[in-house]
Image (cartoon, rainbow, N blue to C red; front, top):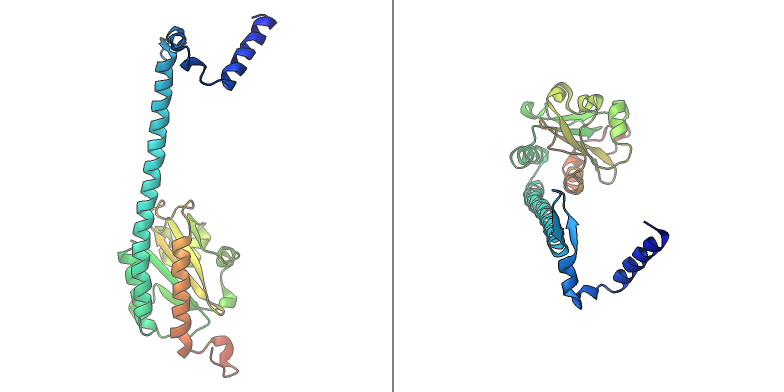
Length: 241
């Protein structure tokens, strides 16, 4: 190809970009244009354009279906979160609050394991709740938990072995993914972790909007129902938090 031919081709391309309706006035030229497709056969420009439009249409349809799937999943999550929120608000007393929380997370959210840690409290917990709810010293948390809590935000996904161990203890080997949210309201109250045996149940790509909302509601209810139990840091001075 000579420089003159190349220059002419560039000029033609520039002219067609500036005049996209050029072929509308000369439709007979479209029938003369032939383009090779992936199969090696020559097809007309109109056929190629139709093929491109079909591909784009299929791509847009797939993207739309993906958005609809996400919308349906969020709708189901919202409904389950609404029921859990109402059950927490209706609970009277710590034991009822704990039972409503565990029942909803197990039945509605299909969680295989729940770990609720409460900081610096002495709370009588019935035997069947002790393996999922425990009181801990906030100044003696395992370093793995301090690492998880460093940003003060909810996290989800496949966590490290030491983090799973710190959260779920002897049940850690069964958990493949988890979500964890700090519980804070007028001070640090504890943390909530929910685990699944499926590695895809709590993916790191998932948002934390719903688990954060659950944590905020639970924190406010805990602040209310735990007022009757002395805070360990305040016991020596006789103060009640």
